[in-house]
Length: 242
Ligand SMILES: Nc1ncnc2c1ncn2[C@@H]1O[C@H](COP(=O)(O)OP(=O)(O)OP(=O)(O)O)[C@@H](O)[C@H]1O
Image (cartoon, rainbow, N blue to C red; front, side, top):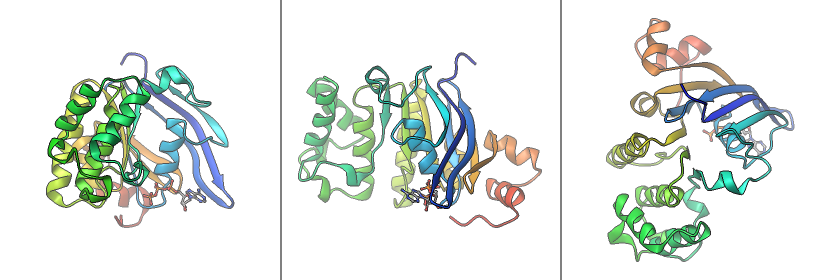
């Protein structure tokens, strides 16, 4: 593996008495599709937000493409895309106005923004206001906004939560294609099937810690079980609840 895309070392973050992230370390290779998998409250979002440079850890260090994401580094921001939740859209703007606004932040031409809308299958919805998009359409728009400046690193927080099975599958195809173009992708998910289908490797998290890292098939084989759900059961002694 060439120089890692991401290295995370010894992250800790407390909220009062809650140890949201309790000594997390991992490395993501360039071009890898990496999953942070765990049940609600495991610390996935906090880990991701610290990795993105959106949140400051109490302890620990992050390097993205060899640079520190905190405090903000404009040169690095151009090379990374963060999928914001649909609730972070600008109010009352259409799909096209949203993505063109993001494009303008990076000096990206409007044609490229339109091409991204096409890429995620939203050309017909270009004139629709954000609050009139379906859940799947809003997720695709937020991914398009994160990709408009052609980043090398892409971060997605629970991108398919709340979608119906068909919309989830469509989004999986899109995420796979993004990765196959050579981008490094990191996503959090609490869906075992999503991690198993998409990720080259997953970090299984629980109670603020990484319990195990590996390719889904390797984890299943190492522990001599039948599924990632069984991996979780084996590692924690309790059933996985999505
Ligand atoms: N801003 C905050 N203030 C206080 N506690 C927080 C805050 N953010 C997260 N926590 C707590 O830290 C723990 C980890 O939360 P986090 O959102 O990182 O987990 P998660 O794995 O992403 O869960 P989910 O899948 O439910 O989003 C939880 O116990 C949560 O309640």
